[in-house]
Amino acid sequence: MAAAARRRPETPAQRNFRLIGEAAEIITGWTLVRERLRAAHVPDGEGRCRGCTSQMRSAPLWPCALALVAHAEAPDSAHRVRTSHKAGPV
Image 1 (cartoon, rainbow, N blue to C red):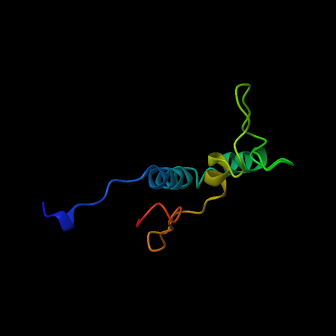
Image 2: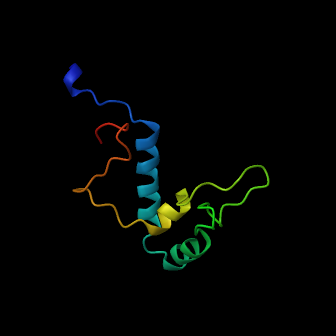
């Protein structure tokens, strides 16, 4: 295979973005699940997710992964978004 034809390996940020999109696509028709996720995973006064609780560590900054899934629209293959300037081409 020619060097120009090889794809670069997916970065962790690109993989996470892809997986969140896939999960959002799966639950698109599950309106009750989406609404419950949207209701539970909201920011608190410190900008952390109220729905993500743990006795071992503090809650992640909002939006957490589940909030992203619940609020994501169905992926549009014509419109691809880079997750950060470090992520490289998608």
